[in-house]
Amino acid sequence: MLKYSVRRMGWLGMMVALTVSQSGLAIGAEPSLNETTPTPTQSLDSPQTPQTQPVTQPLRLEIRLSKRQVTLYQGDVKVKTYPIAVGRPGWETPTGNFRVRQKVRNPVWVHPFTGEKVAGKDPENPLGGYWLGFWTDGKNSIGLHGTPTPLSIGKAASHGCVRMHVKDAAELFEKINVGTVVKVVK
Image (cartoon, rainbow, N blue to C red):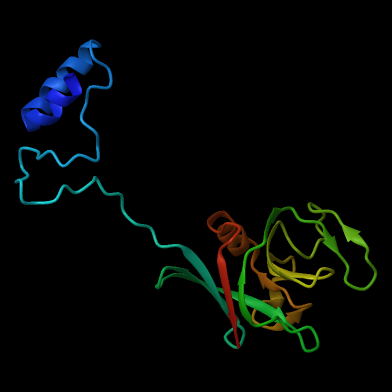
């Protein structure tokens, strides 16, 4: 009976319901959030607007092989561009639309010819400390990663992966999640 009375009483009823509810006498007597009871600043003719949260556009990456750079976008807004190294002839970085499939801190590197493994924190690991994998054929994988050879940045030097300066890879790793769109163009 109290809920019916509160709903019929409009704004004044809402105040009564809050007072009653705060005293602990009638928990759950507040009007539903879906009701269109007008507030003091709202007329009966205006629709009730739910409290809105800012809409955040998703992050995405665009890798431009010819420019040797990856750009982080939020929606259509450019956030930051990083210099990169790309796949060398015979090991070209694949083009197309992908999604980040793996996000690994201190990844183990597996040599593509010998299968030899290099531990994640080993200074000889060519992946650095961060891996954002976006392509695989089931045997080999390609992704963005830091590199212990910063002089390769700006060149076609990798086995298809996208090499980044270690600090840039760390920064990007913190911003990107699994599922983030990765577009690779010539």
